[in-house]
Image 1 (cartoon, one colour):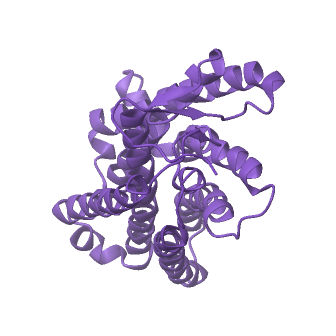
Image 2: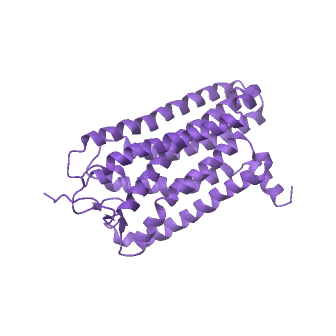
Image 3: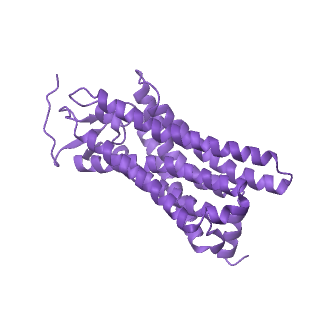
Length: 309
């Protein structure tokens, strides 16, 4: 049995990451760096454009800017460390660094779950209650919804992080993942962690299944409203904005469900790394493209900003 060690601020963890595939590390470094740069550029573009152009000072782009801030923070909480570990033989992270990374990854992921529900409600109000939209989505109410999303995510993460780092850890401190994640950290504990795993499963269900039910409920009402529409222009606009949001929801929730809501198997840890890599690296870089491609509002704002409108 591995010897239990006391935890102090001077301890460190070894993030094994993709050490089992050393021939892939250089390729992964280049691919991840490209996607990370695309994430930075795309999301900063949306944030700056939404702030500078008054025509985009609407609830939809306010929440989209929040999503872009989330994606920037989420990728930055784990990707720079991953790039550092892929670049050289040193794959360590300090105990304090691991705590901070775990807290922010959990907080930002849970916040995005709630924020995507808020964005679906905004689309529901725009399509199903167009005459009351400005009253329903008052700027003050929008700010409260956004703030509530962030508070829910960070409160949930505080509880999980505390419970995880109170668990005694074994001496080897080798985390079989590319970032500090709750299931990977629980695997190196020296005590029974079934209570922690059950807590993780329950909260994951709350932050994944309940948002999905609310999102599908909103889009069920939207679908009924769309079927009653007779204007082809209105239909195109609805499909344009709602289709983009549904695509973002799918890219985020499907990988998360594959990791947190399935029973562990022998190969689930290795599969989980690549699934986590997808929603940590690829999804945040695709969100700006999904929302800006074929988006007349964004193209018009860009023309006005460059003086060509």
